Length: 206
Ligand SMILES: *[C@@H]1O[C@H](CO)[C@@H](O)[C@H](O)[C@H]1NC(C)=O
Ligand SMILES: *[C@@H]1O[C@H](CO)[C@@H](O)[C@H](O)[C@H]1NC(C)=O
Ligand SMILES: *[C@@H]1O[C@H](CO)[C@@H](O)[C@H](O)[C@H]1NC(C)=O
Ligand SMILES: *[C@@H]1O[C@H](CO)[C@@H](O)[C@H](O)[C@H]1NC(C)=O
Ligand SMILES: *[C@@H]1O[C@H](CO)[C@@H](O)[C@H](O)[C@H]1NC(C)=O
Ligand SMILES: *[C@@H]1O[C@H](CO)[C@@H](O)[C@H](O)[C@H]1NC(C)=O
Image 1 (tube, rainbow, N blue to C red):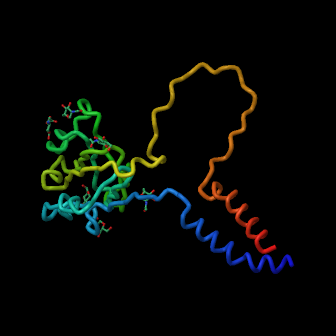
Image 2: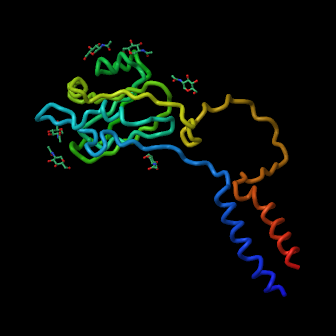
Image 3: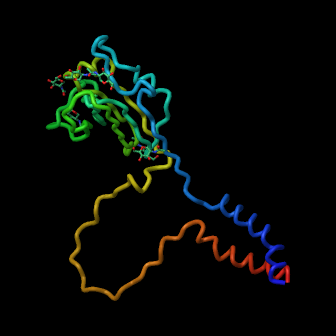
């Protein structure tokens, strides 16, 4: 009797589980990693005094959203400057004393020509500028620079969205322990429903 019930219900429960897996509102990660310059990477050919790719042309083929990453495949010979300051970008040089919108990404490795990947998350929407400040700005002047327009997209993922810490408040006397329920997932939310449907299924078979 027990066995027959199980056999009758089993295909039904399996299809139900599949349905739940398909329709569960799990967040879809819609973030893209953009490899700068595609296969050419982020390099400068000192012999021909030209960048390895036309970076502006490459950028024009991409759609950038908050939470995406720019992946610079490069070497310890190169640098990446990220800025939100158009003056800095146009001038191919950084003046840190005047400009707090500019960030320099280097390897910290003093050995030249070592393979290096720099991953830069896009955390501010609007215009972002990138350039190489190697060779005293010459590489940038020769076209090793590009600007992108970062769209809001689906916003920053929690991993990149770090709000400033809350203001300090004087600790109050300890309260009795409060247990917080574990964060619910799409699957857990559906579990009571699944249990009731299985119960119902058992009743119908009986
Ligand atoms: C994108 O790059 C970041 C930083 O390197 C990495 O954590 C993430 O897993 C990458 N995502 C994909 C889809 O490759
Ligand atoms: C890297 O920099 C060093 C020192 O400036 C130079 O000798 C070397 O040729 C460079 N390598 C490449 C691949 O540009
Ligand atoms: C532009 O760059 C030059 C050096 O290349 C520097 O002397 C000058 O101060 C910079 N101008 C601005 C506005 O940052
Ligand atoms: C941009 O950089 C220039 C030159 O360093 C500086 O004078 C200006 O104040 C900066 N602008 C902002 C908004 O930081
Ligand atoms: C830099 O490294 C690449 C491969 O990693 C190599 O082909 C090239 O000859 C190196 N250049 C110098 C100047 O050491
Ligand atoms: C950033 O995105 C928000 C939300 O879509 C929008 O209101 C704001 O104007 C955007 N800022 C820039 C500089 O594009």
